[in-house]
Length: 494
Image (tube, rainbow, N blue to C red; front, side, top):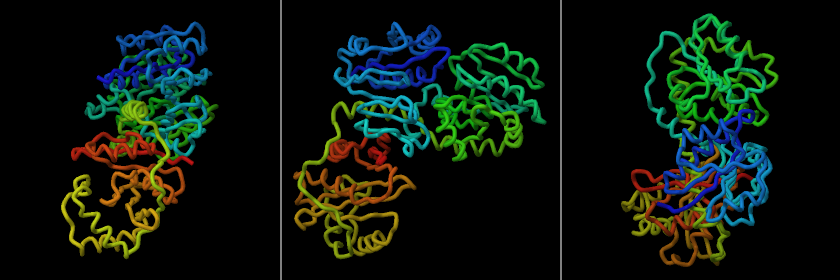
């Protein structure tokens, strides 16, 4: 048990929707699974409170006396709390004087505030991350997407085949432009018959009327406790471009997206531009009916639906909540800091460095902490060095102190926006703080333009290396694999 405590702040009501609350409850569950105590605080109406009681009955809820919470409100609840996690677009007072670590969810330009950890889980938010200078550490992009345990439970469940394509329509609790009823009516444009399930928490008259008038089989449901279990039995979701997008992607459910609110525009455009979903338009939705008609080809092709489903599951791995909570744990024990070790410089390695690199590679301590633990012969090493120096996706560096080689760092490009670092300190230079200085120098020598994610694989038992990267601001990215290597990462956003 960690013994840590977190206070999670969000707002939720029928008018503004339940997205912030659902994300908050998911993170609370992840924290509690790791031994944390958690409570929720905010302007949550009876509908939201009922959702919380059904989903997390042991989670304590404190409600505000009005739409805005004061510093005093937070101070009363923050005693003994290790982390305050914020997920709200509304004004929040400066909480820095209270002491806990401040964690903040932001969606593009919405909800941005000063924090120790800032999180923007929108697709490609590493390109649009607002005001990174206002936070000590950042989690960016779809890797930080908060996915509920209900979703993960459905990720590998096989669906039952159906004679007709099955479509799920869900626009959240607000639907300010009345899109749901229009979508139902527009499906009459399709030449084939489909089965439609509509989620409409308020069961509005216009939605019920559209369902009754449709030539398709349409079922209208109110709020459901386990939307993923229902979504699992569908072939396509027509959905607002909110937080549920990444739930559906994690499950491998093909989507057609509707942008229904200003804070969804960036995520909507990114998802459509990258081919992760079909775009049905933004307000005022003049072409919505025509675009619904274009779904016919996809719905009539089981092969295309299956291929899309497999691609989506590769995009969202469902570890966002784990990344957030384990980042809290790391930041509570180790704050990022500028290396204060010996002054070093990084230069490009040359063929003349072969002897040094060969000796360091075969050092017993180096091999013990490497994935490849066997010795290597000189000829093979020389061939590797020659290839490395010619490889455009590799940067091999020598780290020097007063002109003397003390370490080597290697950068390997893993994707268009990801570089992995590995570091070896000379045996005679260990214990002098060289590693921290070497990482800092190696980062400065990597000239790839931001945004890029810097990653490192470190064995879980290599405590010294873990501390080096933690102090350099690298956060947990992947749990330890079968060989005991965990992955840490940090974004260079600007």
